[in-house]
Image (cartoon, rainbow, N blue to C red; front, side, top):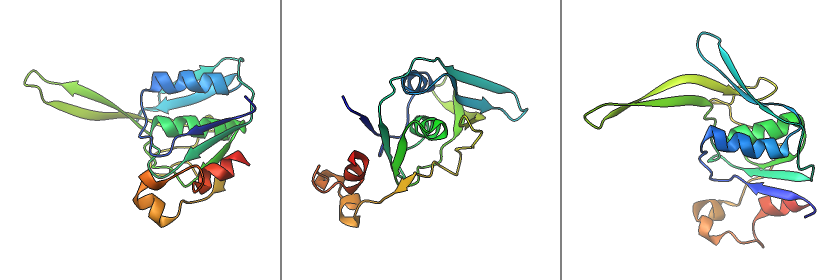
Length: 158
């Protein structure tokens, strides 16, 4: 392949362990992400020196959140790819769930995510390198998006 486009639009995120494995393939040696709890204790996840090394573009929008933002933010911080689209959602917190015997549960926020350059993702999101929005009719009905009318994808291919 000549280059890679990763489409994270409308991707609400996923598991930290999965996104950091993906990021490890795309990033040089160094920090992928770190978390910090309210006491200031940090946990760092690093990448090794092996990386794909191809031209890279990541598509994002306001529904790209959490793990999607971790990947986009790390790629942006290292300058190994361009981020194209609109500002991401801004979910940069780590939450744990405590389950109870009666089947109920309690979600607890335990720390915050930060990009390799120390940017907080929470309530800020990732601002694309190239800001380009879809036309309103396509945002209202994403099933009408095609390769021919997807202006964000076209910008990524250039």
